[in-house]
Image (cartoon, rainbow, N blue to C red; front, side, top):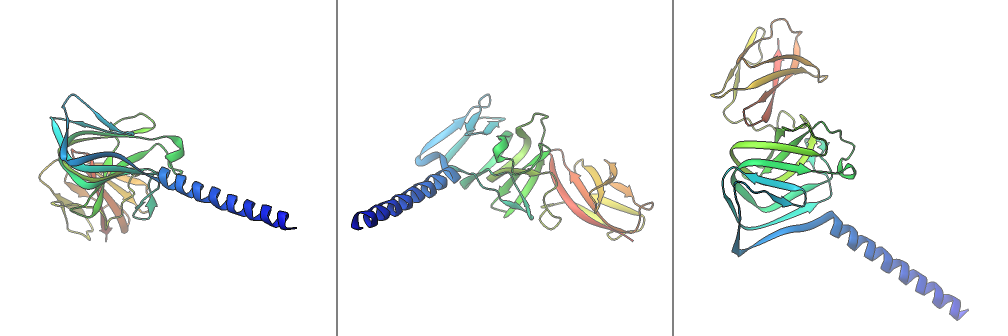
Length: 243
């Protein structure tokens, strides 16, 4: 009887240890430190070179130096205004600043989190405390590429469904739309070119234009979403009300 009780205790202890090991391994897989540059170190990426950090590729337009930084990867999704991203997020413990060049996010099927290949890149900037969306510039499955000619600040990088950001979360500094509400036309005040697309609340495209004066007089009354994409493929969304 004592021997049977002892064997049962052994099985319980063994099961508990196995569970601890599984949890520990799962945590290791969920968050992994990929790159560490100490306070005395520096990493320079030449303009013809590419830094590949476990599937996140940085290819600068000019020689770019990274100082004192830690890059980690978490195999979990983040919320983009209530819509989940892919189950892989790259995080930097301090922002990379003034980066210009190409960023490529590589993924596999197990990380897609029920998303299709029709996705966008999302970059979090800690100075603005917001995600920004960047259209995919390649047509290759399992990679999402963004090309950046304006200086970029990077704290986190992931991929999600296109147009995941809500109107309230879109960072649209310098873009003004008036009048809004309107019964006839809306004007977009911005110094650079924009590609403008108007959607109804069902997500259906109702018009597309590069003109900064848009005639909405023929549309039904109601609420619409205006998507404005600049030359750097940054997308900002605005709520438009047709009277």
